[in-house]
Length: 113
Image (cartoon, rainbow, N blue to C red; front, side):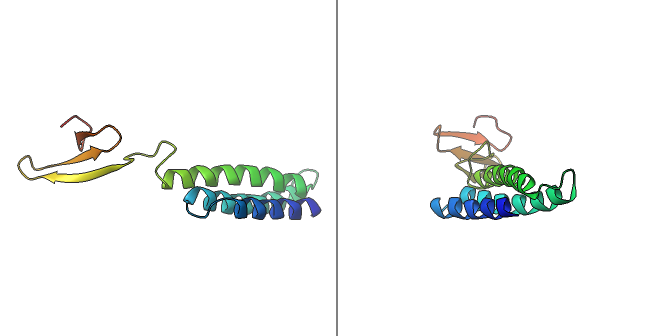
C-alpha cells in the first residue's frame, strides 16, 4: 500500500510539472491515476497479492494510453485531418480541404484539387 501511495503522489507531481494547456498532459495524468488504482486492486487480488507492483504497472500503462489519447486530441500522433480547413466548391458541388503544412488543396476523397 505504501508503494501505491508513492506512485499516486508521483503522478500528482508529474501532472503539476507539465503544462496545463494541452490534452496530452491532462489525459496522461488521469490515465496514470486510474491505471494505478486499477493495478493496485488487481495486484492485491491476483497472484502474490502485491498491490505496489500492480499499481506501478497500471500507472505506466494508463499514463501511456492517456498521453497517446491526448496527443491525438491535440492533433498529433498520427491524427487525421491535421491543420486542415474544409471548404465547399459550389461549382463542383464537392468539399475540399486546404492543408496549411503543404499549402495544397485536396478534394474530400484525398485527390489533389
